[in-house]
Length: 125
Image (tube, rainbow, N blue to C red; front, side):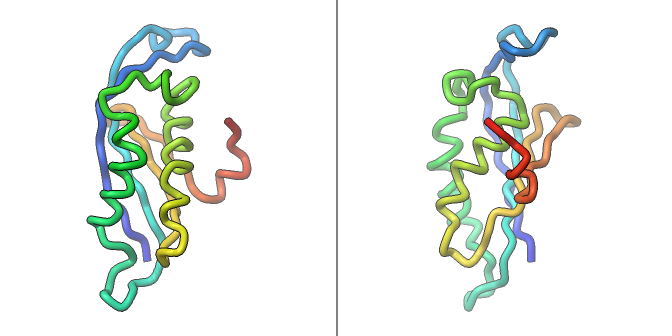
């Protein structure tokens, strides 16, 4: 069974290794979702939504919201933001009966990236 929760944060960044308008300082209201896979426990939940919110708030949002992303993530593209989020929350899900299946990051309302577990072997940084 899949469980998904969405979050958002506001941040600025510049893509120093990109040649185009996004190499200049600018900001976004990012949206992202975290998808877990697992079976319902004795309470009927893959993971309590409140617990997931706490994990993400403490380990992702507290670092990214209203920040300059370049101070946190080198070359903060949506792709690398998704990878950073994955690496920040995956350790806190171990042993809870659910595993991280997918992180999706929207840079705009119509542009997003999806990072799945099977992508991790191919993604570097």
